[in-house]
Each structure stands twice: as C-alpha cells, then as structure tokens.
Image (cartoon, rainbow, N blue to C red; front, side):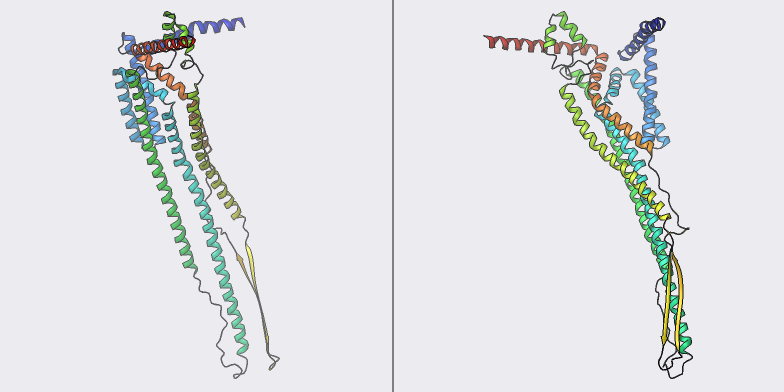
Length: 458
C-alpha cells in the first residue's frame, strides 16, 4: 500500500506537473501575438497543423455523411479549408483567438442548432423513407389481395355460366323429344350472361397500382429533396452565424470594457487585496460570478429551463416520427403474416331442377349438378415485399445527439465563461483594462451605498 502511494505521489508531483508545464508552454506559444523563440514557432506550426487537419476531417465527415454531398466535392472543400485554416491561424493572431472561441461556442445555441440539423438529416434520409417503404409494402399486399379476389370472383361467375349452359342443354334435349306442336320454338336456351373481362380488369388494377406507386415515389423523392435542401441551407446559415457570433463576442470584448464583465477573477481579487478593499468583493459577490464556480446564476438557470422546454417540443416531434416508423413496420409485418394465413374458401353451386307435366306424366325433367370452385385471396404468384425493420442504430444516434443537446443547454453558461477566459489569455492588456474598470465600478457603488446608509442614520 505504501509502495503504491509512493508511486502515485511521484506521478502527481513529477509527471503531472511536467505535463501541466508542457501544456502551458504550448498554450503560451499559441496565444501570444509573436513567437519569441524557435521552439515557440515550431510549437505554433505543429498546433496549427493539427487543428487544420482536425477541422478538415470533421468538415469532410459533416459534408459527406450529414449533408449528402459527393465524395469529390467534400474532399476538395475539406482540403481547401484545411489549407486556409492552417495559413490563417499561423499568420493572424486575432483569428487564432476567434477560432478558439468557436470551440466553446459550439456548446451554446448555435452548436445545438447544428446538432439539431444533424438529427433532422438522419430522420429525413433514413427514417422517413423507411416509413414510405413499409407503407408501399402494405399497399402491395392490398393490391395483390384485391387482384386475386377479383380473379376468383370472375372465375365463379364463369362457373355460373357453365351451369346455365349445362342446364339449358339438358332442357333442350328433353324438349327435342316432345311433339312438334307442344312448343312453338325449340331453339331457346337458358343463358347466364357475364360481361366481365378479366384482362381489362387486370389492366385497370395494374394501372391504378402503378399510378399510386409513382405518386408515392414522387412524394418521397420530393420530400427528401426539400428536406435535404433545407438542411443544407440551415446548416450553412448556422455555420456562418457561429462565426458571426464568435466575431461579435471578440469585437465587443476588445472594444467595450462593460461587455461580459461580471466575473470575480483571480486578478480582480489580487487587485482588491493590494488596495485593502477585499470587503468590496464580499459585499457584491451576489451580483458577480466566479468563472471557476459550477453554480449557475438565477438568470442562467431560467434561460436553461426555457431552452429545455423548447427542445422537449422538438424531441416530441422526433419521437412521433420514430414511433410512426415502428408502427408502419409492425402493420406491414402483421399484414404479411395474416395474408399468408388466409385459407382457400371452397364454394359449391348445387343446381337441382325438376319439371313434370300433367299432360304427359311420363315426361319429367330432372337436372341436378354440383359445381365446385375455390376462392383464393392470395396466390402463390403474388410477390410479397417484406417490410423493412426500423434502424435501431439510427434511433440510438438520434437519442445520443439529443442527450448532447440537452447537456449543452446547461453547459451554455460555462461556455460563455470559457469564451471570456480564452479572450483574456489572448489579450492580456485588454483584460487588465477590463479588470481596472470593474474594480473602479465596484468601488464607486460601494462608496455610494455607504453614503446612502450614512444619510439614513443621520
């Protein structure tokens, strides 16, 4: 136990401190305007190369997988972007700060919008077409059942026609043996007229089903194109707005000392201790925020709850679409199973006809026949399209993305704090001016409050 404790102490005291010192040197080389040594220049080059390669890879995956662009266009765009990112980051110091601010900005509403865009794309490209395919499978089952039922019904009508012909032939053979003056005509037949044309009926059924299929395919393609185009436009807008928001934050940070200046930083505490006014920070600590604290202010908490409510409405819509996918699959699966279980229905026509006369008792007509027909609702030639099961991995991906989105709601406050911290590390002189302004503002408020309390006592 003592040996393990000694190893842990060695790792913590030696290795961790060395790693921390190395990371601070790397960050210093990245955040200062001009490198002061060859090692800082090399570190800056390596960092910019790694960042550019990471941005290019993520941009390629986003364009090719999420936005459904072609491989060539995605690869070309990501390569050009990687080169430009490396060049600009290496040469322009404010852009390095701007680009670094974008990372925590992804934890704000702009990052949530990009993740929502990815969720919408998953639903539009994979889940909605799966619903349409299962609906088409159900329609094909209905078409096949109706077609076979119609053919069986027409066949039964033809069977009635055969029965009528047999009956008329039997009756005519009896009449032919009667005297010539008994009936005025011997050429009459009992006929069952059937005007149905099985070929025309099949042709009409095929035309109707083909028309319905084409309408479904057209609607499916139109919906996918509209959603894909909308998602691309929204994704591009959100990306540019993300850059705009980071630029807006950095611009206000550099030009307005009052902007986002509500934090009790270590430098502010040191300044208050040097001037022996630490009690001022204690009195105003309720209105200020410690950037290292995990506690959310009431304003931040209310904003988070409002965003959670709006995201829940979007999540309900997504869950309804996913539930529709499962319902369509189970309906199609049940339809296929139940249709295959429909038995063949035997139909028997029993025709019995007996005629006798008083004039010639020996003359009697007896006609008795049985005609059998099987009504089949589903033929073995009928093609059954098997339903497509829902993609469980895609559903889990949507749930995971929404989990990240919900997490970013509460991380948004910490993202703003991190943006201020990054800006302060890149522009130390501006941060010192902001601290001086905040300190003087707190002193003025404290003196004004003391004067008001003194006037009340007097």
